Amino acid sequence: MRLSKNIMGLWLVQECRREWMRAGEEMSFDALTQLAAESEAFISVIDPDFDEFLHPGGMPVRIQKYCADTKQRVPQTKGDILRVVLESIALKYRLVLERLEELTGKRFDPIHIIGGGTKK
Image 1 (cartoon, rainbow, N blue to C red):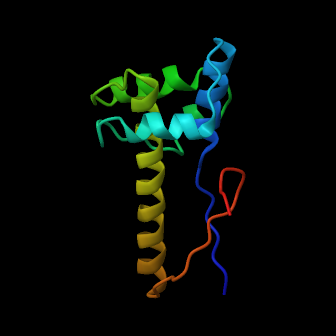
Image 2: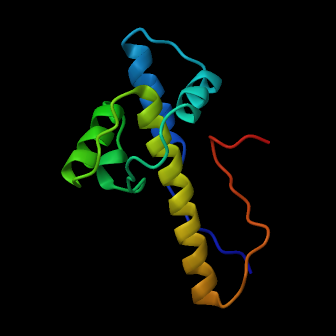
């Protein structure tokens, strides 16, 4: 049996990067990851599958608005925004995995994450 669940992934990071590039700030994914690593952990959490995140354009502002609208700290820097996104994606993956295991009564090991943002 193969279960499959689509979860928004690194699209959010790609869209943030695209927005910053439009503003003339070109950065590699490695540089963005470093900024996130240097930022404070768990200042806010977003739902990566929130409808407002499904369309391109203005992603950093939409992430900040989501945090403000949900009465959380609003990430201010690029690193803060990226860390919120990456931590939120990880938490969403964990939640979905736990729910699938609960529904099926099985432990899934290993799991495979596929898509445009994954690296081999």
